[in-house]
Amino acid sequence: MKLYAEPVAQKRARIEIIPLIDVIFFLLATFVLFTLSLNQSGGVAVKLPAAETSTPRDSKGAVTISVTADGAVAWDKTPVPLDEFIRRLQAWKQSEPEPRALINGDERARFQQVRYVIDELRKAGITKVHIETKLNPQTKK
Image 1 (cartoon, rainbow, N blue to C red):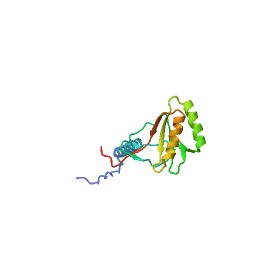
Image 2 (image 1 turned 120 degrees about the vertical axis):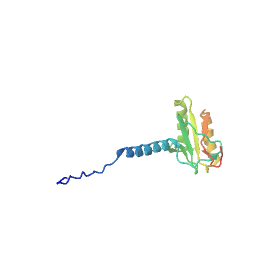
Image 3 (image 1 turned 135 degrees about the horizontal axis):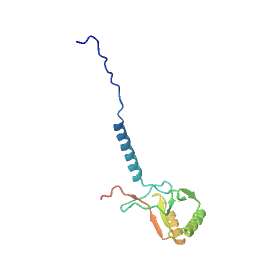
Image 4 (image 1 turned 90 degrees about the vertical axis):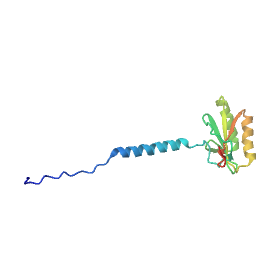
């Protein structure tokens, strides 16, 4: 028989760090995978036309020429007047051995405006021209 009371050991609250690390790594992996799946355009923001045969493009070494709905032309993300566009096109052709162009045209742009860009690319001797589109959501694979 004990005549004195034993001290009660108080349990201290602990923060378990292992589950927190798991959650952080899960969020990090989700964020990385999401950002890698984004298709970032090198041009100004336009509403691309939909196509059933749309495929991802490789923008490395290519210039993006955007044609907005109101007919403005942009070189990569910089809006340029038409005479500046022609000067940049000729300088780019001189500096790049195999130039490639991506035409990023708004679906509401007039065909005449896009035709002008294609015509100037041909005059400069650039034959590798791609027109950017988005995949038609009604397309079944």
